[in-house]
Length: 114
Image (cartoon, rainbow, N blue to C red):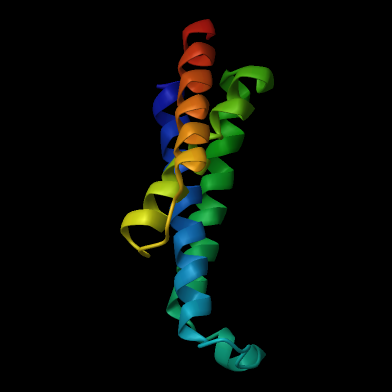
């Protein structure tokens, strides 16, 4: 159950970051002003996802040592890299993919420790 909560917290945080990216893409390179920004659905989606992710994170911290739980959030780097590459068509070089692989290895090793 704890790892399911952790996975959900990671996914919500990732979704919040994607919504942030979609928010600023809608602004077309310049801040539209506070009132216009506050009418952005993507901005509110980002806030909702990040807020829900934080609440789940608090539940995770009740159940798992922070020394195990916090490094698991590195999965966000993996998810965001995949999102950037396949959703936003951003280029990802070989060195970056190697870093992603190392993060995954570290998360697997830490997961076995819990």
